[in-house]
Length: 388
Image (cartoon, rainbow, N blue to C red):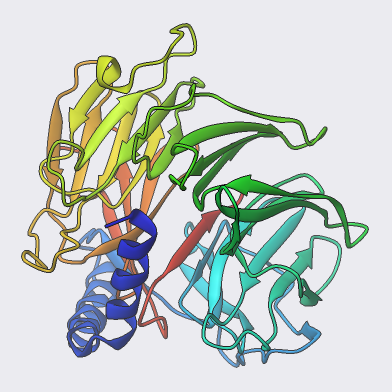
């Protein structure tokens, strides 16, 4: 089973889960207790993020009215986006969309939220764009693309479609570079296979594609400024790659998540640009013991969100793992929530749970997250983006 199918299956279960709502009740109780303890001066590490008094949730439209003061990260469920100030421990709902959200990007210049409805090809598909010098979000239609993955740097956004187009030599995916300031396409083209993951740093974008009938799963490197791109792995290798991650030192890591074939399942590899031809098995870093769903790297450490996509082990007591990429030692972290998305700041990791809880994890964590918070009103976390 491919990672895209695993994500879709897992995301659907998150939306429909009655257990998630039950868990949320416990989280809200914990949050209230935590706030009381903070007031009492006990130094509790967990706190509830509450919206400002008198605030109203904005509605969808060409320009949804939003609060001027944006926080340091954006968190979203299927239809609502919250601006979170993690230092002041405040949250504000800034956008409500009619179509399901497919990705969120947040920079000092722009916030971009992509949406499309898989079951309604005639419904709105496109972007909600917030510019740093304006209030609210502009609605930008992309009728020729159902944007699923995105990356933003400066005024340029890379977008990858959720839909594949059959061609004689296999399936292809439409991708493109969009100029956010001018609200126009710079370049559009087709890439072989489906796009499984997008990761970026500055103007460099790494794109993970899946196998199709004639080409192999690969990692491509794109220059966002010029639009030039090349595959990094020679053909053919048939590696079932799922996700890429770039550490703060520039090293690229590749993950294969849960598969039917155990020899490929749940493994981390390092990409070696000096090795030609590149051999995945010769650059093995670690198993993810025993499941992997998402990865983020920071200063030589990697946070792994663990999830058994088969449903055999839905409640893991330690759903987060911290991997030392040099020593390859791995420790599991206890957290009473199921992580669905990971991010990083300049100094720590951030995990978002399916019930909307947040965990902040330092690179030296050994037993549990350094602190946890709950966003009031967010009951089904899906997406998170730290302001860059």
